[in-house]
Image (cartoon, rainbow, N blue to C red; front, side, top):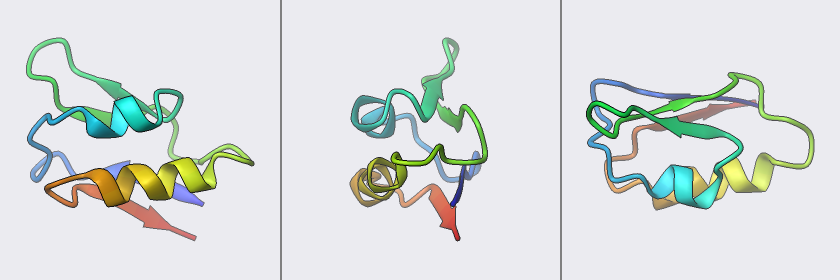
Length: 64
């Protein structure tokens, strides 16, 4: 599974990083998120899905 955060949509709610801190990091400047690694580590797929579901802006893009 691959994950990315659309920077044009992310509003910096930080829910993804709270849900999956090993998958997402936050900008110190504006709080916007980015995926630490495009490839989701084995066993972390459900966390990635939960982070995507929790994003109010639907800025997290998952692909198989």
